[in-house]
Image (cartoon, rainbow, N blue to C red; front, top):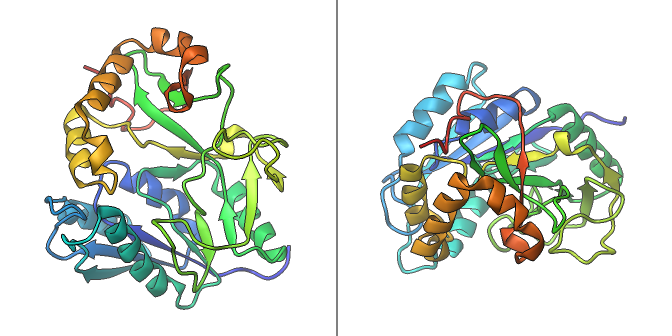
Length: 288
């Protein structure tokens, strides 16, 4: 490989559930982590968020003093929550760009499963002159009583990649909407042909990785109480808080086999397969 690239990261300190797992995964390979938080502990929607819990957890794992804590005011209640999301990310990304070549922008419920593979892809993206890294996430919906997870899948239970936006961008990038930005991407996938049903089937894939090296996105893997709280403060609160969504999540958690068998007949976002992952101290979530 060529030059050593300087990597910083930013964290939006609002959701503590998978925070430690997320940051610990990339902590060894970054130089600085900008921790952006609302100093009034108020979410983008105006509801309370557990900021102090997040900060306490981060201080406990920051054994090398990499965290750079940046308070601000991000609950602009006259703005749409997703505009507040973009506003806070822009602030954090600008701060994290100082002294960096690339900035990681991972949410706190996203865990890099193989940081060595991830950094290798980032180095290749840098060598090729890309300005953003699109790296596939595996969306985990819930943990079942058996200990397995419901993972979003293709119609016939294949592994799919999901791309909420570039998970790393060159320093100085300005986000356009949430994590999305106008970048020249280096795109990684789980197969030589695109696996994301939201992208065209002929979307370019520049590097292939094993599914076990992807990002594990625990986006709905929480206790029911925490799910309800998160639904209130998320930038997608208007849809996440719909009662039907919580009823569906509860039913699928209790009936994973029926959920899996119905995948061929379901629309894109409702297709799941059962997946086994290595144990984690938080993997009891979803039991009742």
